[in-house]
Picture 1: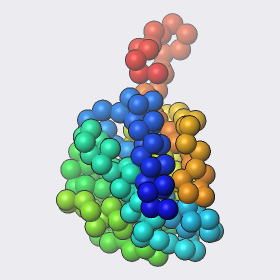
Picture 2 (picture 1 turned 180 degrees about the horizontal axis):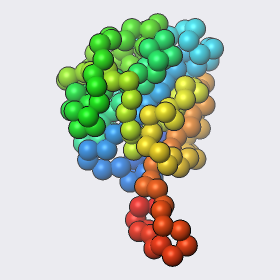
Picture 3 (picture 1 turned 180 degrees about the vertical axis):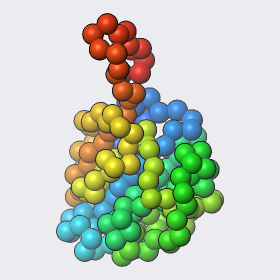
Picture 4 (picture 1 turned 90 degrees about the horizontal axis):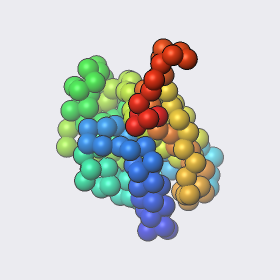
Length: 183
C-alpha cells in the first residue's frame, strides 16, 4: 500500500508541477486527510504511515526543483500551515506557536513538521498551486485567482483529489492586452 500511495502522490505532483509551470521559489500547498486515503471518514483514522507515503511521493519532487511545500493542518488547528521558515519570512507571515500532532493538525502536517529543516507554523500563506487530498479545502491558502486542474490521477488511495494552479488577475478590460505566458 505504501508504494502505491507514494506513486499516486508522485504522479499527481509531477503533473501539477508541469501544468502549473511551477519554478524555483514557488509554494505548493497540500491538504491531506490520511483517514480518507484509508477509506475512512475524515478525521477518524489518522495514519502517519499513509501520510509518510504521500509525503515521500511529493516532497522530493518539490525539493529537487526548489519549490517549497506548505502542509495544511486540519480544522483543529484552524487549517494553519506548516512550512519552512524561509517561506514565512519571504511572504512576511507571522509565525505562530503550535506543533501539529496526528489528531490535532493531522498526520501529513506532523510528518512535514518532523522532516523540514526549519519548520514553522503560520496562519495564512499564498501558494502558487496545490492539491487537496480527501476534501480538506485548501482554497484559503491559494493566491486569489485559482484555476482548477483536472489530473490523470483521480485518487490517492481511496481519497478523491482536486488540484489547482493560480494565475495573475486580468485587469484593464476589453482594451487590455495580456501576457499569454501568465494565463
